[in-house]
Every structure is written in C-alpha cells, then in structure tokens.
Amino acid sequence: MPPTNSNFQNYFKLLFVLLLCFSCKENQKEQTAKTEAVLELPEKPNILWLVTEDMGAYLPMFGDSTIATPNLSKLAQEGVVYPNLFSTSGVCAPSRAAIATGMYPSSIGANHMRTTSYTEVTGLPKYGAVPPPEVKMISELLRSEGYYCTNNYKTDYQFKAPMTAWDESSPYAHWRNREKDQPFFSVVNFTETHESGLFEPYGFREIETRHYHSGNRDYKWENFGGSHAKNRMVEQETPIHLPKDTKFDIPPYLPDTLKVRRDMWKLYNNIAEMDRQLGAVLNQLEEDGLLENTIIFFYGDHGGPLPRQKRLIYDSGLNTPMIVRFPNKWKAGTVDNQLVSFVDFAPTLISLTGTNPPDYLQGQAFLGEFKSKEERKYVHAAADRFDGYTDAIRAVRDKRFKYIRNYRPEQGYYLPIDYREKIPTMQELLRLRDAGELDSIQLQWFRKTKDPEELFDCVNDPHELHNLANDPTYAAKLQELQTEMDRWIAEIGDQPNLPEEELLNQLWKGAKSQPITVTPNISIQGNKVSVNCSTAGASIGYKIINEGNEPESWKVYDGPFSLPKEGQIQVMAHRIGFKPSETVTLDF
Image 1 (cartoon, helix red, strand yellow):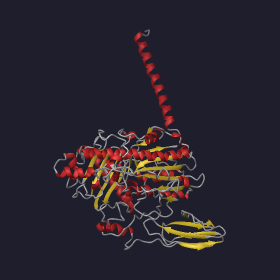
Image 2 (cartoon, helix red, strand yellow):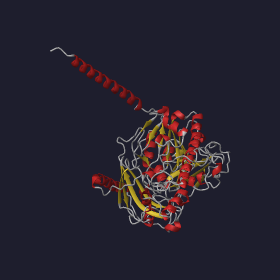
Image 3 (cartoon, helix red, strand yellow):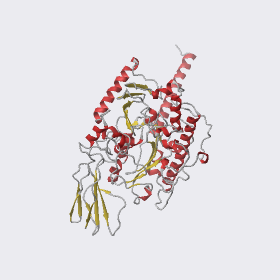
Image 4 (tube, one colour):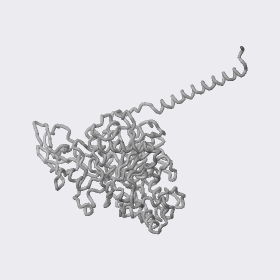
C-alpha cells in the first residue's frame, strides 16, 4: 500500500524530533565539555582566603538581592558558587579550629566556646584544644611545602598557634612580604559583619585602612580593632548603602518591629562595607599580576549574626556562603550543590597544591588532584558551652533532612548569653516575650524544654520550625540519620555531654596544669644541624641569626639543615595545646 500524506507527515515529525534530540544532546555535550574542562593549575598555585564573620546567605548570588555587592557578584560571575557549605559549629572559635586543623572540634577538645575565659563560671584553668600528636595546622603543612603563609589578622582557633604556623600573622600580614615568585597561602579576615556590628551605637569606623595598607609596615592608624572597636561613628554619620525604610524579609522566628528592621538594615549595610573592603584586596591581587595563578576562596566562619542564628545548629547558624574563583575563570558562573563541611577545607587545600592529604584528616577533598571519588553525603555539627552557659547538642544533615539530638532535653534552647543580649533585636525579643506578644513560632526558642530528638525537612521547612521526628512517614529517614550520627560520634571519639572537667582531665592526661613542650635538643656535625624534641607531635621552629640580622618568622624544621660560617641559631618546640618550650640559643 502506498504511503499516505498522514504517514509522510508522521515520518517527518519523527525525523524532526530525532534531529532536535540529537542537536540538543550535542549542545549539552558542548556545554558539559566547557563546564568540565580540566582545571590547569601552576605546580604550586597561590591560594587566597577571604573570610568574613557571622555570614548567612544574604548575598545576591545566593538568592537575596537586598544589598548590592559588586565585588562578590563579580567574583561569583567569574567563579563557582557553593550554596551548601556548613560550619561544624554555630560560633567562630570551634569552627575556626576545624578549618585550621581539618579535625572536628569535639574530637580534639575545641568544642566549648572560650576555653581561656569564663573560668570563674567553669571553675577550670585556662586551656586549649589538644589534638592527636600528628595533627598540624594546615598553614604549617603548606610552609613545609615552600609556601609563604600569612594571616591578617584574626586567629581564635581554641588554641595558641605554634610559632611555625605562619610566616606572619598580624595586621600587616600580606603576600607582598614574601620572597620573589614564592607561592603563597594568604588569609584575610573581614570583621564588619560580626555580631558586634549590630550593637549600639551603630556605625562604621571612620577610616578602614587595614586592608588598603597591609603591604606597608610603616603605616599607622588609630581606629584598629575590627568590629569590636569602641571608636565607632554615630548612626547619623554612617555611609548609607540602603534606605532605612527598605522592606526586609524578616525570618518568621523574629518579630517584624522597628528595632528588628533597623538591625536588618545594619546587617545589610555591614555586608556592603565588607564587600568594599574585600574589593580593595582583590584589586591588590590584580595590581600585582597574580589573579590568574591564584585560587580565591570567599566564605563566612558560620551562619548569620542575629538571635536564633549564631550559636545554634539550625541552618541559620551553620550554613554560610562560599565562592571559589579559579585561574582563567574555570567553570565561571556555575553552581556546585555538593555538601561541604569546614573539615573539608584542610584536605582540599593540600589537594589543590598537588599533595596527598594526610590520613588523619577527618574531612575529604572536594577539589584538586586528590579530590574524593564520592561527594559528601552528610555534614555534622555540635553545640556545647557558649561563654557562661553549657548545652549538648549534635546534628547531622543530608541534602534535605536534618536530625538533631538534644542531650539536655530538660533545658531550653535559649541561653541568656550576655554578649548576644547587646543586640537590639535580642532585647526586643525578650521585651515582647515578657509582654506576651510573641506568636507561637517566635516562642519556640523560649520553650522551657527541648524535644529529645528533632527531624526537619530543610527544603520545605528552611527555618526548621516543624519537628517531624514523631511522624511515622519519616521513620526510615529518622533511623538513617540516627545511625549516621552514632557512626560519626564513634568514629571521631566524640563524648557528648561529657563534663568539661573530665574533658580537661583527658586532654591533660590527669595533670593539674597545662603540659609543657620539652626543650628541643640541638646536634651539630660539621655544618649540619639536627634538632629533635621528645614531646610527641611537637612542631620545631628555628631561626638563623647572621651578622646580627634576626628573621621575623621561624622556619619549620623538617630535617637537618646547613649553617653559614658563623652566627647564632635559635630553636623552639611547641605542640598544639601545650605550652611552648624554652628557646634554645647556640652560637656557632
């Protein structure tokens, strides 16, 4: 039978669809090829970390266009946006301990916020985290590989950094102080977005100079001190980035009042100021001709600064933005939705420099030559003591659900932390609570007790307000996350709700005072120097003083080295969590 017009029409329709599908697949292949192009890096790429404080997802590239951030927006257009970065704690010092060491804070005794203060409350001496002996700060590992490592200027690791940690850690620290063509790892911290930036009286410092003059050691300023500085302008003199009558999206757990809106106005203006300062550092990098052989990371040290954000392990306290810009704009303008934890930073940094990360690290590399074969399935977090108040909470999250285990369910979520109560929004919450004017959602934080277990659908309930733990529909997910939490706690040696006195007893192995790193021994044979220290895990640093010139930084000792004809050698040892040794000085 001859084909009909209808058959011909169907044939050509089918042919058109097949050609269209083929064309789409070819276009997809082309786009995929562009996106998945191999990242070509120098043998030792420079790495720049731009770190801000108390930073929720209040940025245009993360879905919030309230404030313009031209410098971060450009960075995002030329880089990769990571919306699923999570800190290991809702507060800075434990989280920075994880970043610096690649270890979970509750595995090394870094989980209690402020271990060198509030001793009148804890009844304990000042102490620092004591990681296993093999653990080193990530910057020291990079220094051993020839990197010039600087930190400008915040530390706050829950322990005193060994003298071998940085080539320089100060308000002047800068890659510009390195040897010619030496690869660098530089950290620049921005303080304007810190919680204290919401305190009264509100205003920016009169002149922000630290990042503009950081390569100039002769520059002096009077207003140094970050957002903690007392010398702040009155509100009327503040450079305004947003009108005060801007309509803000107030989270449902906060009341929509004038004071809360004013704090939101401050928050966004602080972000704009941080963006301005960050832009100055990026301009320095470009002026130095280093943009295209430097990997740039931008991230916050945990979630947002507002009440029911900072210190809590809801996403509002843990989720913080990250942007990574690679040389030659690799994968520019893309979004990577994989889960990333702060413990992943150390192995990723090492992987990007072409070295296999040490086995002891508790995270996994998400970039570089030694990138993990599988993406992370879960992220974990903990909350313990904050200043003068102690709790014990653990959390685990996958891409959609979060499970929280409260080890002190008899205790409410809200803790009357003095520092937080300087925020006008916190004062407003307490006023309305006492007046009986908070709604049921806003009152949740002030419940007298907690549910022993909580399960939240973080996609459909992003503010984590509706506990699904007792809903049989989610029983399988609850069991999955319970099992994962048990596995994680056992693997890292966490001891939730362990009395802090017992923790300190374990860290110091029963000693009543902080252990001291043993003084190192120096051996000279010919012009070769060998140094050893009997304290397991001690970092050893040395300086060679020749013709009266003393180096500013301690070199990392990683094996015998040669001496010049005459001079002086200084040697010191320091294990993290111990007191440093005495300095040994020897003429030769």
